[in-house]
Length: 428
Image 1 (cartoon, rainbow, N blue to C red):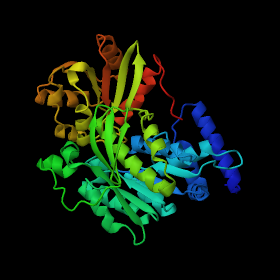
Image 2 (image 1 turned 30 degrees about the vertical axis):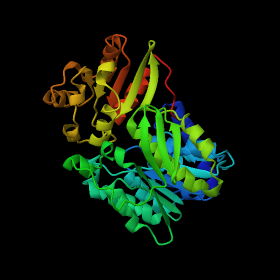
Image 3 (image 1 turned 180 degrees about the vertical axis):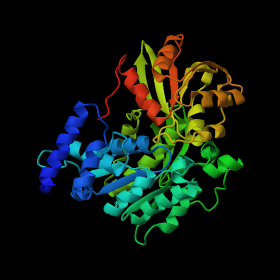
């Protein structure tokens, strides 16, 4: 290979990214090129940021919480770099950097807020020591990839141990809570959490199995706790002060994610935090793509709701009354979805009895339909082909608002199909 200077390699990477986008290629491919020809690219680029690097990881809520943190920090006057495509591998960060850097290699940002997959976060912190880490939860997800749930916890523990400034932990998840024991001496630890009234609504993985809610005794103080909510109006306890804010996102889980995002933002800003601006910005946050994203299709709303594990599916089902919606479920089993879909048997679908499911689709459509039958949920149509299933679903929705529960690759395919008939935000 002909030796090239690092700036030239970066320019080649930016050219690959441009060409990849023209061809409609994957968002991470240019990052793969940089990993091969300039492995230190990500670390060198992020080292220039004056406010450092934030890593957000955990099983559920990474994308939405990262989006919240970015927007909340921007409300405080910071310029934020992030990997907003949802490509949460190290190469995805490299690809995002190529997209944001000028042709001279300048990155115009104060701080980086990065969503990282649990396993790839371990590789990332070997190269870049984060200044802050926000760790959300550990749930049974992609066990064909991770083996067992405590493996996921150990990965996140490695991230916490590498963090140099502050680690923000979910005090309600015992596996996350215990990560405090692995944080390096001198690194600050903060928590976000729930009021006792809401604790049973957000069970940890163990609590889902046992049905017993853990005692609130011996829980550390939370920097931000979700105290209560009614509709979109939420009450937070911020360091002992009761604060009321609006969260206009589908799903009760996103209100808890807001508590996490605020705790991290307040920690980054310290004494410079503007709480009024923070709360005002909270109401402006829109869903991340595919995570409660709402589209207008033929004059009716259609929501895309990513599901990938029992807890997330359960909370998503609990967020709205089934009889008010036309419902479709799309289940694929590609690597990014998790090849093993047996987790569907740990989801309680009885809430769908009243209204049924209008369409089941995806590679594992018949597995999903069988699961619904065991919970006495009526399924109107089964069609493994996503394209024709979507068309039939829309045609038969009878004027009802529509919602589609979908795994990751099914969500991407459905967005691509929906872009043919309505406005769908392009994720670059």
